[in-house]
Length: 121
Image 1 (cartoon, rainbow, N blue to C red):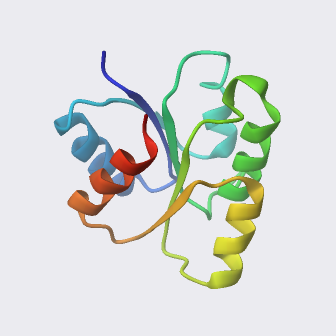
Image 2 (cartoon, rainbow, N blue to C red):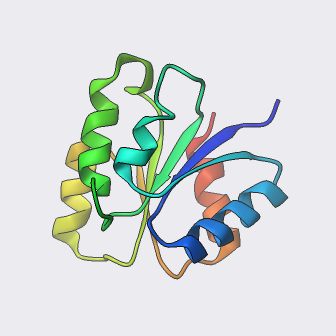
Image 3 (tube, rainbow, N blue to C red):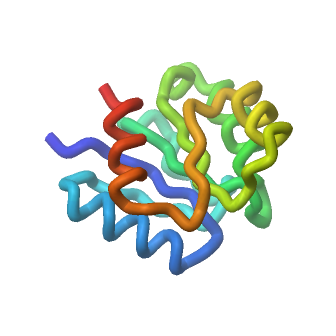
């Protein structure tokens, strides 16, 4: 059965590239425009991994991670940050919120898949 990955990014072009990359690898992809939009998918449904941007309207990625980590069903789900931010302070803030890993945009599809393979069981 295909692993289910939720992509959360306010950039349509990033959502399309990430979705295309993942679907070509056989993953099932769910797409949200921002953290608030992503919450509708977190209703107890099975999701294997979340990939989120940092800077988004409505709810940013760090706030989303904090919300996800409050939900018993999703407390252990891997969450990867996909962002243009590379500052150590932001990485620590994301890690403290519960992020599993960090991928810098623009990304190389092979590196994204490698990162997924590291965190998916």
